[in-house]
Amino acid sequence: MSAIQQAEKELGVQFPDSYCAFLLEHNGGHPLQSSFPLTEELLTPRGSIHWFFCIDKSSVYDIRKKMRTYEDRVPSNFLTIAADPGGNLICISFKGVDAGKVYYWDHEGELDKSSVDSYENVYLIANTFEEFINSLTEEDLLETSR
Image (cartoon, rainbow, N blue to C red; front, side, top):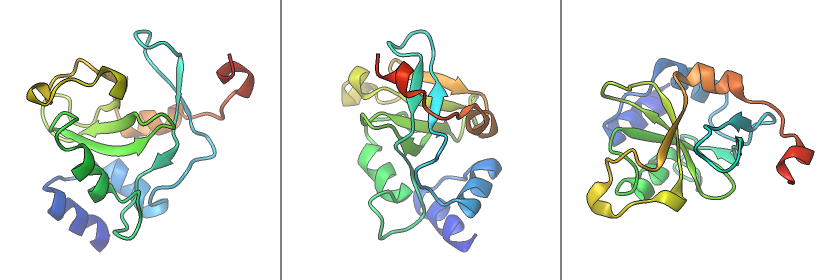
């Protein structure tokens, strides 16, 4: 828990309780059930998690490193928590009217830096982190190969 609190302090963010519990139990990694539903606006009905970020300064998947990498690219109220195989992100809003909601950040629709807080290339995928985790299923290889 102290490593999570240190990461929160360094990032100036308070992680949602459910995300803290997830970090305490798993601390990142590649889930066996990695497929999740996407919105109709995107070209594919399902996304996939390549890796959940962790709290480990020696890892390339350390959440602090990922937050610094994307700080000028994703909305400022987003905590980057995972990536898909194509470089898109799964994020949690940590403040504002949508605090706790989980979004898919599509790097293909990335805007110029002057509009970093735009939601034009982000898509709501769950109202809570728990809802997002509960939506994960095993990938259907026949479905994803089309």
